[in-house]
Image (cartoon, rainbow, N blue to C red; front, side, top):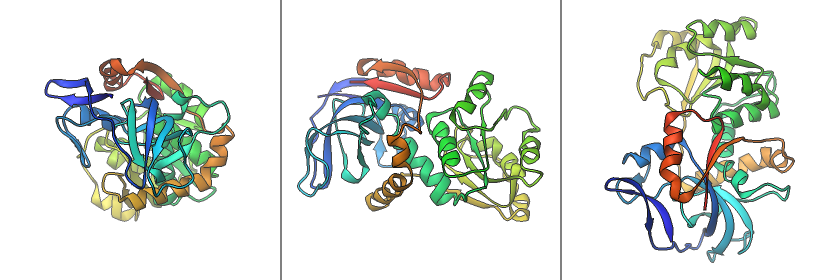
Length: 323
């Protein structure tokens, strides 16, 4: 089968063996896959959990039709239209744990649209609701809100009863579109006074929950913008893996600073994350209340161009590959 693989000289399409599902796995005939920031690191040769280096297959999520299921799999059968998080999803076929797979809603959702959902739903439900412990009526700020995951985070917060949802972007055009996805106040973090705007919007209290996809240079500003006893969930590090950290401000505000990643989670933990997400959000997914825009679609053999578009950081929402 054809798959996007990290070669000695960069990403390339190679002929590789078709995977076989283990007892608790599903084999998907991939029809669409979507890009995520982590793919850029893998493409550069870095490791992402157990994946990485020359020979690594790219992709973290896909949608398609079930080709076969393992002997222990129940509730999913050959021919089902599905989406799921799946390592090596930039390929004609991918295998993944059955607990990561969901049927595509029968609401005219295309495979391209479906491929955009798994990582965003799993990541942001976990960050906002489970790790972030958001309660109805609380305020929420999503750092890096114009990404697919960020757009989903704002929608989840609004759906689950946040009083005010804020999102950040350094791009004026993208900030203008955030309100389409549940944002009440768009923040420009190139303005050094942005924490004051957050505090003003929350009556001087500060924001209850920040889901941070940027980290790096915004860590201290996040704490400035945060309420006493607020929570900051560290989801991504688009602004850098390290940075200054005001330990005294952290202590004064008694902030819970929570790190999350799928890289160190067991299959059982991921299954539970997916189960909780479905319990809270699947009715909204089926009703079309949670949406993600597709900025551009590329065929699989143009995967390098797709990765370059993501690296340039000029997209709004998701970039998709068709297979």
